[in-house]
Length: 380
Image (cartoon, rainbow, N blue to C red; front, side, top):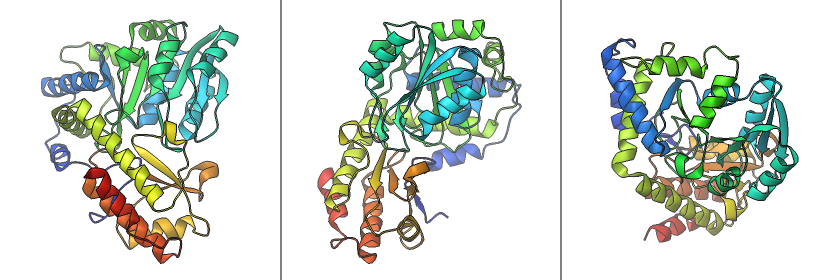
């Protein structure tokens, strides 16, 4: 397993410092020591979110944070606008439906991004919409939504602006305060490069007002309970957290801040640009519209005559590089390269060497080294 390079859109390779942090002795989650660690971690989390608002850790995946955001801010029977252009936009809508929220779908073609104009038109036609959900980085398609521009539009409306940055925070430009985001959620195992199993959420004052006006309809994900426990001295979580994953998040966030958010985002953008160029150099076709392509994952159309099983099976079993397949109707039709977290020139060279040799072995391309040469050129 140690020989497999994870080039997935999560989970990602974990820094040895983070792995070492997990091995520390578990402390009392109701004691002062854990309270100190929790305080430091949530403060670091807010710095990465770029907000003065408090952040809260959730023991659960990014989906837990998505459900927390939806269930606590919009009441059953109220209306929510869901932007759906991929698997995770769909997930937001399914979560809302599960909680009895009236959903309105704003569907965009997979591989393209919603525009602020489309959102404004939808809100103009439906003044009773309480909140909208937007996935910043849709890993199923390799598309990044224009969340800053959407935020400018949202200032003209009373609806809450809920954004999923699970696969973008720490890898792309996310400024909760500047972008006017009311509820922002993220996960541990993507650009933050911590192990899976922890999520985080932060809310604006307007979002908290909505929380206070919504009758609690979830137990484990109750934000009122999270706030009450977080306000204690020392602060706590309402239920037993993963103490070890808190250690991991703490260390991974320290690594993010040591690198610097601006530097980290620039590194991810460089990797994305290099990956796109290498895909083209191999004669492959991108799935997403390049104008809105993701900074953390690149989706590529599967070459004609090549099956997902033989392609990804070979890159993994023969060359030690794990790539992601397509989801839903894209299954078997695309493969996805995650270039997030602890990714540099070295990992991209290994990845495109594996892709090139696999495709040449399958008779799909002639020049196995074109991708690696392109990566080298991008980093010169």
